[in-house]
Length: 370
Image (cartoon, rainbow, N blue to C red; front, side, top):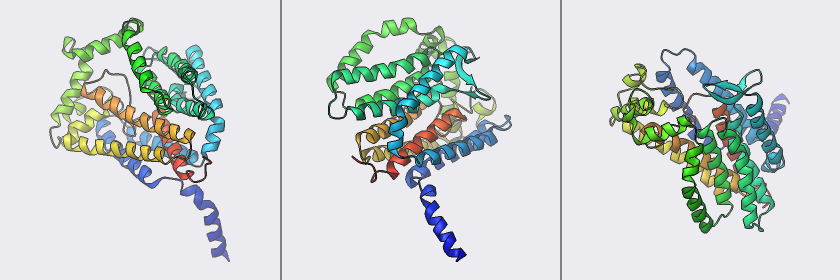
């Protein structure tokens, strides 16, 4: 009787423990494992980094599991409140935020949180809901309203200032607008407007942001100052060669030439120790991650879930592309972590939240009304 009761209890609880999408979960675990191995080497001499990251990973998986159990219909119902709360938190940061390293990006609520991170998910959630409500009757003004919804949080984030996060939110929001059916003519016109407004954009950038762009063009103009980060990271990437110097044997990292080696520049540590071979394996993992996300988006049952899954996948792509480009010296340094690799709490929770949404969409694909 007890055995039957246990079996009955497992049958009731099993759906809550089988929500993880196997291929997606496996790819994420491989990336997290690679990140922990690299973090151990990068964090030698910095006690507690691996332990803290293990705690962050556990929290991220808890969030992933919780979100994967939420149906897409529920996500649609909470899209607007989540967006409004996220915008209010950004306003609170502007008014009462904690200043660190010259930027006002954090709110202290017992612990320091960075509300702009959550906007990376709240933004595509809101726009996917917006376009779902207007499916089949989209007009030019629909895209204009969507652009305003995107511009409000982006403006608040850029004012902190946090150009890297602002660009990621733009990428997340614009991917929804594009996938919703924005015409190529509109894209060409938008590109022309952006190109024509570059002088204005340049004039409103902060001094340090202009310096980053100029440093990208010629890092040797200030090799011991503004160009130090790019020069040292590119030296680390190149010195790895084909097979790398070996785990924990990266000289650039351990002699502390690489800045922020556990966070934004962890790819430089990985490249130096595992070389081109390791980089190709890592890029393959990211391609598999993006490919799985696009497959989930393609199989999504309705407009809302297709847009949301596509946008989250583009977030992962933008994270990886910008970080690797930044560390390799082909993009300006904007402070974007490498997904599931860099040390961090809030960013990892956001990535886990996005993965949970993808798993929910995959799990409920046959249950959602089209």
